[in-house]
Amino acid sequence: MDKKCCICGPVKNCGPFLNKVFENIEKIGALFEDYKIILYYDKSDDDTLQKLVNYKIKNPRLEFFRNMSPVLKYRTHRIAKGRNLCIDTIREKYSDYPFFIMMDFDDVNCKNVKPEILQKYLDRDDWDALSFNTCPKYYDIWGLSIRPYNFSYNHFNDNVAYYYKLQDYVEAKLNALPDGSLLTCSSSFNGFAIYRMEKCINCHYDGRVRLDLIPKSYVQEHMRATNSPLIFKDYGNVDGKYEDVEHRAFHFMMINKNNAKIRISKDKIFV
Image (cartoon, rainbow, N blue to C red; front, top):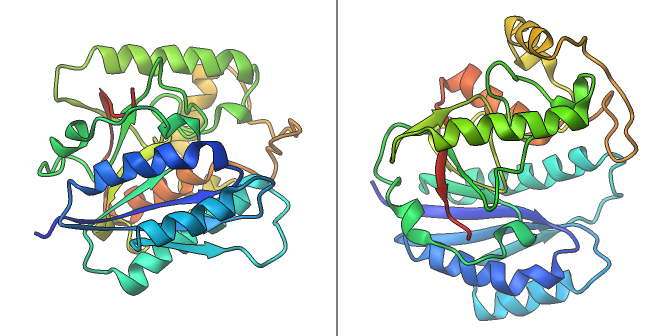
């Protein structure tokens, strides 16, 4: 199978990080026979757009799309729109590329990259979506669904306390893994994940609350683990009635439709 990959993501107010992130992408792209960079630009207050324009001249593998529509009200809905445009572009133009990487373009991936970490997993068949740990700890607790914590920590009481409890929980599980073993979960992103396109062909990102995608028993399990009912609270930056992290819906669609294996490696690509 050809090792071709599209590297994707939304960008907004990422100007300070883009030079280093693009440098890291080039090192990751060198692992593949060919790669494309597909980005969705949303209205920014810094020099993000100019840096995209400049980089496209340097690296014609970059394709970026500008959001010309009114900005959506909810942040997770905006991000889902951008991620969906990226994977729709893959389906339309690069259907022969078996892998795609979805990543963030902020400080998380602005560290020094270790592409050899990713390389050792490319020929393995024990994952369909693979994310990685980060320094100093796994941070993306919102995007994490791992039993018994199967839904968003923001939809249960004591969300701040449970953020740290879940962080310690997943860190302990990752640290206990034998070298090379992967941790099973239902959703994980953590700023960078690689996917097999064949397991995502009929899936999309959705920043709405999609309890219909999650088995009822999983929600009940989470409620027991937190001794809390479901709550739908407006936190100011997140409105729990209308928003959930967009990755959860995508990963549960992968599982429900295609029996996908969602996994986490304890290895750290960015250090």
